[in-house]
Image (tube, rainbow, N blue to C red):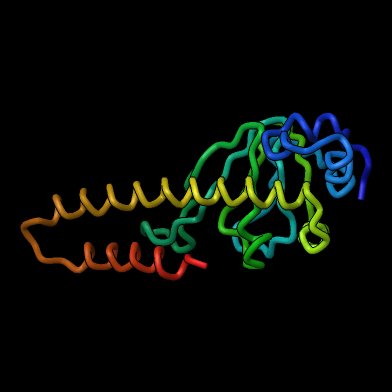
Length: 187
């Protein structure tokens, strides 16, 4: 662990604005700074994830590999660009599953990383910083799921319009996916 991260800088991030100075100092002690040069990969889709990252400076591109399209290995598609303050890698941290995207630095970046072990220890110890971070992470994930649902509904509607003349199972497959998202993603 590194104490190179300043507690005042931690408090300035929207993830930790509710923390007092002592709580922010404890959060800083559980984070490690990481500098990434433009073009470097922070993590790759399919890698096992053990860290969550907070982008505090620079720009990150998130990419996903899309199978098919006549290419043997598929092709990378830009999912989004992240700007400070942003969080990435939280799904692997929470689910202990492989990364679902690749993160590439578009500019020189500074990120703060928190390991799964540090985070779990802090949540089990009921450290306020970890509980605050978990709450904010939950809100971010809920927002992303809500946006994904809106896009999925839009795709279903567009597909229904395009396929109105023919009876295909594509709409049914999308409806089944939406149903699984709401039933299998509930806790």
